[in-house]
Image (cartoon, rainbow, N blue to C red; front, top):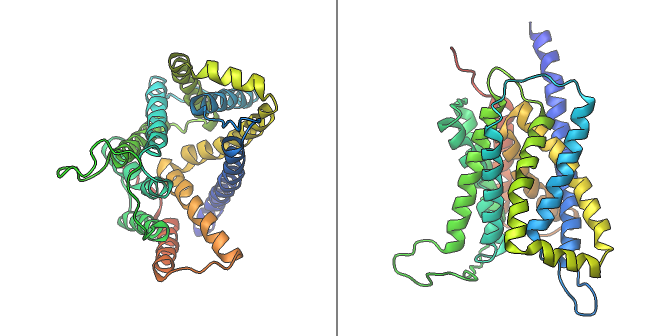
Length: 328
């Protein structure tokens, strides 16, 4: 019995490891290319690429084409998924991303990264409330330790004022507008995870590329109207006519985005949104920790404590991370 269980668990562990490194490396390179696109000064006027909606829109188009091509070569089966959940899930996903990006207009980037580092918490809470998930008690402790460890590791002692707070120094304003946007973004992350749990279902395992396809198609639908109504598509077209070589960077970004989403949706459908949120959250932690080790940058005692908490939390999650199946 134990032999057979070990045999059945090993491919799952291998798949999870492959997904982790796939997400890690694809989005590491994705971040470099994205910064290359948005931080470059173009032309004599030193113009910047500021077309966020168009950038995401064309990534969603590439992801839709990529997933559709894979689905055309796979033997599709009707998995019993309620297709009406996809437009809702795409809407909450985009709302989370846009609220997070808008928060950068009001808070510093480190504050935004710090705020988003607690993403596994709302994903777990909404999963319990909406998707009726149940976990081992040690799982809750593991998630709490991982989140607390990342917060301790990334926290900056130097305080910065909000860049643009509609209620500066207001006596009743416990949080700024940027922080409020981060809370909205985290709530939308939690809803997205819960809906993905619903899509995945308890009786049918959704094909990762089916979820990837419908999520991106609906995202394209919402973003199409957004770039038309905001007029961003027209400014983007003029920019691309002036600097056509940017298309090469956009193609590279789209390829890396497709690879990254392949591993993300494989993780979601096989291991759940909570496991995926833990991987994407710890990815930044390991990137920073790696640079600290390679370049011998000093670490504070708080950062060492945070690192220890993350590793203990990950060890607990690997042992007790499986969802408790509900009895009918």
